[in-house]
Image (cartoon, rainbow over all chains, first blue to last red; front, side, top):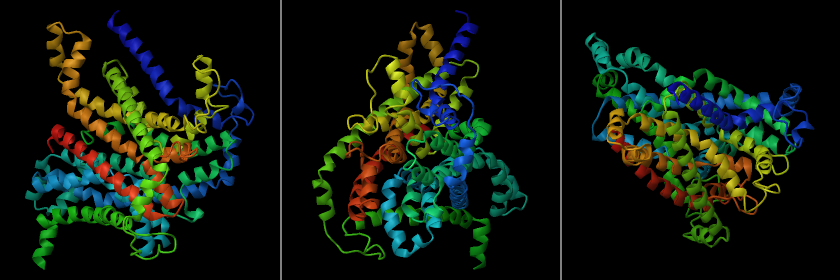
Length: 275
Length: 300
């Protein structure tokens, strides 16, 4: 078999594999556009019929989608801001030096990355309850989620800072910049792309977060969309087209961001950070 | 005072400040809860005593009640099956996919990237999607299995005690496979091509090259990926919440879900903390392995 034919064959196999893997996503969109009777068709209708766009309009208010999405947005923005403000500088320092103290710190950060949220939420809930942080549940959730996302962010960002040539920072220092000046004017802008990809990943995590929000936020008006989905799932357990329309509304921004920035996200992840 | 400010702006104080910011935050919101967790595992913490920082001491009562719970054995076995099964399948499928996309055909990198679309999804949504795919009467998976002739009657994945844990495991393998694949791809890309060329000249076939070059060269990557797989699988919660909620009758309850259930369904935070303490010790032990293999690879 010639090389060209091998390539074509591999290409077709890749297409099939990706198709099988992404089928759940396809099925979500197709189901969300079906009528109530065609979701229960036997055998299942794999191709979309006439798209029932009103499924989306119907759930928009019934399921309180604007409110849930707004809360998700608030939590994701807060988490990204906290993680960025507290984590970026540490990532820079961890990338700049190499000594035993840095090793110990890095080790601590790596160890903190592994704590399962559903196990950490018990002490956090009891602690927050006793110091009164549960009176500001969304803020409390943001604080807790940021502690979960920060180690991952620091490790990704550190890889971004390591790509900035040391000479450029030293040149800025020679030109009369202070350390702080060189950091904000030279190093941060140069590492910008890596930091933005890392921040985007943190934003996505915050946007989809469930455990901390479900445990720390009691007021339904402050719940994010992940809890909105579970709330919607239970009473509507046969309306799979409505549930899938909710799911599609929720994840389409994430999927769109992924499609647009796929290359940067994959590069950011493989930049050596997670090895 | 001015020296301190100058150091903060233009000296080692600047680095110290930056690192302290992060470490202080992590200490308050991860370190303190870890310690507090051990403390409340020895206390009676319920809805009535929640508002205070200190609760009545009960010694080892919480531990005894957890160990003597009839569900404890089931949960331990479930956790082992779920973790080992998920990690083994994610790793095998991820490795196979990584090797496949390592054949440099046009579009390979792009196709490989597509798989991450699953990984970036919120866990809860993945759970709801699989909930629908695994539906007993109208689920696509049952339909496919039936039309292939592999099963005669529908399997009620979510409500059959024999299948519920495997239903969540399937979703988890789908969810975690891309991450395994990407990390293993990075490891594969780091193996120098001339090693393979030399082996080929010596007459080694593809199978021999895999066992004598690929696997030994990937040893530290494989260690890191397996350890990360265990860590992420022990973090998995959303899929359980969205697919089976630990049921029916505890048949799909794993340790990290049980802990949460005791705390937030039965409001017995002391017993929830007991399971947290034990599981966190396990996780920290696994992450020691992970950090060690990371160090071997990247020489931090």
